[in-house]
Structures are given as structure tokens and as C-alpha cells.
Image 1 (tube, one colour):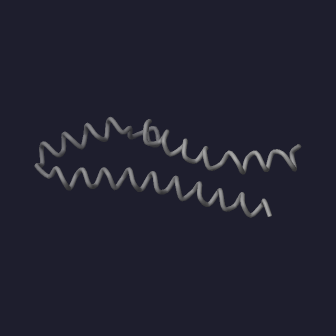
Image 2: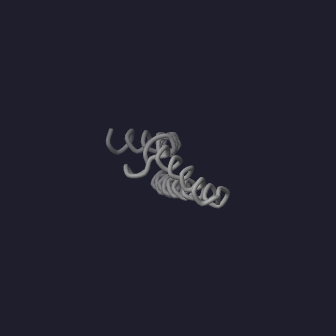
Length: 87
């Protein structure tokens, strides 16, 4: 079972698991230090005090993009690695 069933099961579970992992990162705290709500609240405070609303929101959106893209890239590499073991 360890050599036949488990590799096949893991290979089929990785893509949905990757999607779910990225959704969890977006919906909950990021790296347990900065949560989306805290970051959004701080962004609104800084935007109000500096009057640079657009620049600050673009920076925050960039942060979310980098975190999500890094996770997607990592899982993509994992899927490719699992595909190599298939053949």
C-alpha cells in the first residue's frame, strides 16, 4: 500500500490542497503576525494621515499578490515533482 496507493493518493490530493491552502492564507492570518484585518486597518490609518491612498493600497495589494504567488509557485513545483515520480 505504501508504494502503490499512497503515491497515487498524494498526487491526486496536491492540487485541491494547494488551492485550499492559498484560500486559507487569504482568509486568515498571514505568517501569524500580520492578519488581513490588521493590515487593512493600518492601511486605512496611514492613508488617512498621509493622504496617499492609492499608493498605500497598491502596496498592500502587492503584498497579498506576492504571498499568494509564492504559495502557488511552491505548490506548482510540488505538483511537477509528484508528476515526475509518476512516470
